[in-house]
Amino acid sequence: MRGIRVWSILMMVSLVLAPLAAAAGQASPPSDKAGVQAAAPPGAQQVKPAARQEAKPAAKPPAKKGEEKRTEEIVPAYSDIKQRSAVIVFYVWLWLSIAVLAYFLRLWIKEADRVYKAKYYEPEESPRKGNPMAAGVGE
Amino acid sequence: MKIDLKTFLAWFDDRLAVTPLVKYMTKKEVPQHEHSIWYYTGSSILLFLFIQIVTGIMLAFYYKPTLEGANASIARIMTELPLGWLVRSVHSWSATFMIAIVMVHMLSIMLTKSYRKPREVTWLTGMMLLVVSMVFGFTGYLLPWDDLSLSATKVGTNIPAAIPVVGRWVTQFLRGGDDVTGDTLTRFFLFHVCILPLVIFAILVVHILLVQKEGMSIPLKEEIAKKTVPALPFWPNFILREFIIWLVLLGTVLTVALLFAPSLGPSADLMAAAPEGVKPEWYFLFLFQTLKIFPANMGPVTGEFVAVVIIMVGIIGIFVVPFLDNKPETKKGRFFTYLTYFGVIYAIAFSIWSLL
Image 1 (cartoon, rainbow over the protein chains, first blue to last red):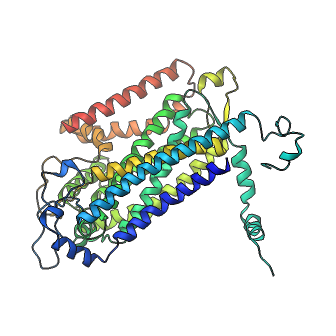
Image 2: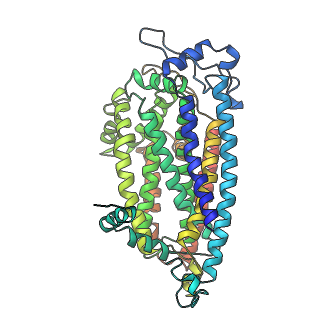
Image 3: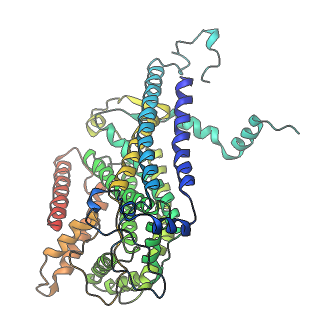
């Protein structure tokens, strides 16, 4: 039971920390990112997260003061191939973590249900009543 | 003076009374029956609210609620900030998921008649939360400040004008003037990030306290038969099951947000004509279509006025349903069940019609 709990807690912590780590890896000043975007080959810039966005024009930086007003729709897009790879890896890892964590939680639930059905924590009916080895457990 | 962890925790426990709360959690029980699955919808709403808060704060760091800055700042979020488009997409999709689950939650309560005595006020606060969630969506829709959001807001804020006496004033209040302008944008932003969060938290606290006070309802037939329904401890048996559901929902909303990220149109032009195919968010579609089917004039009054009155009567009716359906085990109760089915079919049919 303790092992399951430890695993579940470790997975939860990792689920919270991984996006932060991914964000830290991605983090760079906006101006740098814009530079990367401008320097990236056209193919890399037009990588899109969804199939429905295929027909739409590629992302463009917003118009600055004095520039011509933007008339095109901005479509969500990865800034470069590195970001795209990071997102794909993150999502694969996310679903794997969910599957593993759900497995451990399921074990924990089974154990909790078994303990409840055995009335383990009810003083009068507990199977540990009179067992000196179990004294103080769960109290 | 030596301070160990035990002393430190005891100090907090002494002041914050954590032990009685933990004891309450371990004593709290959740009934187990054929409709138990619906109990999980309540906590799922809280999960999406949490996602909304986190992503909303991230977006608010860069969003500028001005005529010149609104659209450009979102364009910047989407193109310059690392994964900004994904954060915006998660915010948008979690709002959709949240409202969908709030609707499912309310519908399950209507069909299981869980609003019956003594839970009438719990129902009222739940309905208030649904309305506030929808207002959240309505105010958030304008913030990208593109042609579609501007036109939809013009249509939406014009609806209250059909109400006699106060209607025009309500429209002016919402818009901050006679028309949708930069003042409306600032006003909607203020509602979206300041006033509505305060309102939703105030109502949510009352709602959760009422749910704790009255406990979870059991099915009507078991209550009439005075049967003892088997129960499950809230901690850890029920909450662990909830964790699994939260994880799956979290994965689903992140995946949907990645695959169907929303785009951003050009900045709205206040002088331009409304674009074709202006539509509100999906949860307003059936109301939008209801307004459209009424003719311009119906005798001495406008068709819009009649539609608004019918919609308002419907909304008030849903609010007071626990008081109208006060004998749910009788024929009257069955009538309200059929009325609920009719309402669901009507909303789905009119939403689809609106999209055609």
